[in-house]
Image (cartoon, rainbow over all chains, first blue to last red; front, top):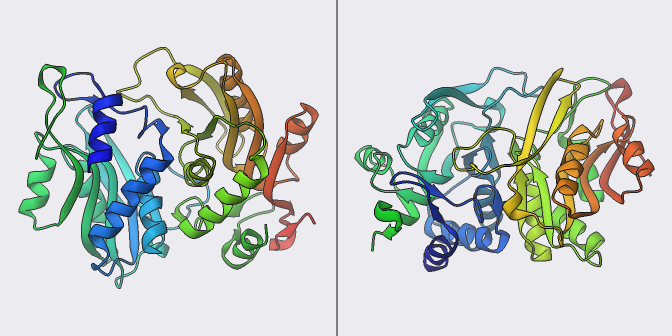
Length: 190
Length: 190
């Protein structure tokens, strides 16, 4: 997606060979117009997939997910990382290991909002090692629902997440595929 | 805002005299169409206020904030509750005390995204005791920026947050003002 590539080139900061900082438009400050374009793109890609729900994870997945949901006319659920006072029922949950933080955390969704008839599109801001995506897939399967595909804003293709999802047979659509951050330069696939 | 009142009546769950659960459309599952209406309403209310930035707090404030930013054509910043790997600079921060969780937490914004020329609209999903709003006001003032007003989706008017903000002279626009949750019934002001 050219508008996204351009934004990454202009405002992305390469912190290391592994870490791309995009806090100017995606995961701290957010560009709403760009999110609208991203949501429209995901909606176009998955419009024939019979999507009934979008699932994402707090916090940076919410903006692209909500714009996709607006276009497709379906609800968005964000998995919670922390216990909420008002989420008191038995939750569907899965564990996420963070390579960068070296910590395990739990993400959870209320079973009230996912049923076995749902066809779910997973949306997230980043795909790196894929641990967050695998946790969401686990939760969706626990609900008996179907994973119809994954829409990723920025994929770090040099990490293992994409390859694992491909091997599992999931449809993954990434709007920017980063081949390398070597030498402080963002190189895209294509 | 009638569409919001109706949604609260239909899908809100009164858990106690103090707690209204709206996880079906606002803070776990999100209704994108309703968020669009909410964003358009905030934009109409503040269109003549010279807003240059919207500030909210993760995670439930992001959806209404992004729709408001889309309409007004301004960026949205969400204050982070947890340390991020890529937010490495000195951060503007403030402490929030949660009455419901009896815990203190820190919220933070990067100073790169707020300047003294910014006129900021604060958007949040709930206003209760107002501790989150006061923390955001503190951060915006630390940046030397101006708080132009606050847009709140649901205000629990029987708690102290609204009265304190009024006394401080801030313009507060709440789309649903809950007078009482007594007896398991949601009673609105107006």
